[in-house]
Length: 347
Image (tube, rainbow, N blue to C red; front, side, top):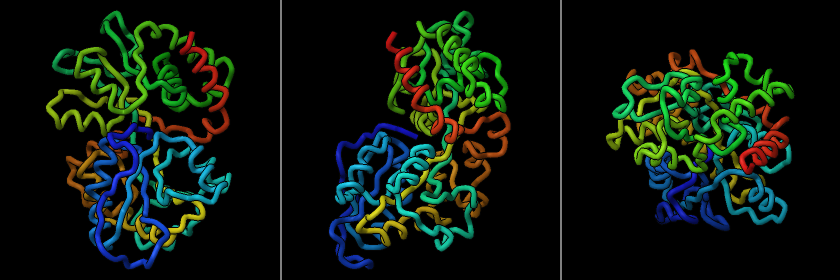
């Protein structure tokens, strides 16, 4: 999940004396997508880990993409160790040899975790979703589907959508009546792609495009959009700040982000240990209680208060009408659809 960070550049998370891992060429560096989820990583994982191990710890942010990882591996100047990545980019980076191939089954936390959250090069970091939200203080009878989102006659005003083909074309097809189970089958055809863009044409004059996870909630609070697509964790953060922004779980589009280790990291063993720590029961429970994103550790899930579990994207009730982001589809079709989308937005 790409979320632009509140941080600029790399920040020293903590500086303690000594390390149980021996000398390193540089300090362990972990990279996330910033924002409220990175705040949760820091409090649930990174600060406790640094204190427990007595290490110097560097924190950085990324907006995604593989250019930096590729440059690091190709030049032999690897300055990142553990990196948060979206599923499709993880798969591409793994196939290109940019990420370490780790036997995740050797992790002490593996036995307590959902095996589906492990891939050749990554461990599931969070289950997140893009959902619909609005200001319930201003709209009493609010939208309940993406078809409602497109209904500007009943609910006039601007709509916030993420400025990417991925996570936007799927919404357009659902708004046009395509069943959840058929979205990617339809989108894989030229006719289906035309259908998605035609549906976007209907809404284009009313769309306000967002590029960072913070923007749609800021716009909703300011009243510059009537409703918006947004990341579920961001909405919950806004709720904690007193905003009456409901999460519409119906037709949520959810996915998994992963922790990966950059190939040839000089801190490889320590990076694996950090991933193991982040995936273990107590830290995972602490994380889910801090921000409502799904977790890999099933033992931690079982220990969550029912009220906490109910607001996770991976809660059984929230998955009933959900669609999982098809990363394989976007690996196959991402370039062509991204180019078409960019040209369409620019017109």
